[in-house]
Image (cartoon, rainbow, N blue to C red):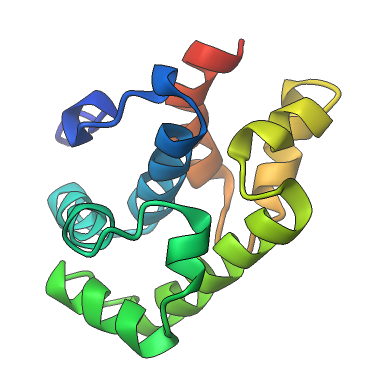
Amino acid sequence: MASEISAKQLGIDISQGEGELFKWFIASFLFGKRIQQDIAADTYRVIVEKHQRDTPRKLCNCSWQELVNMLGEGRYVRYDESTAERLLKLCNKLNSEYGGKPGNMREQSKDRKDLEKRLGEFEGIGPKTVEIFMREAEKVWY
């Protein structure tokens, strides 16, 4: 298996705060599915870099069809419709429950286990996605 793609390889510097943590959150979500890493990385770049959907607000302002189209552009086609729906739910939940900031999840968590539980409460985020996200987030959070 190829080595894991890091935040740095995607041009994400999580030490730079909430905006970068959100980008890694989206990348982790995409990497967490059974899909080739290069396809997930390309899809991340299409959504965040090409279409500038780099904040929860901007992502939530996409229509479901726009997201399906972006996922298709990145060749993330096996799960495009369900992923589009879950990305919209992800940004809505992040906005409504955590003020659009992944860091607020950490602040509201009593410990790492509680934080991982909160991450897992997002639809479409399972243990693998939590593991991927925490691999980088723990560098600035713990």
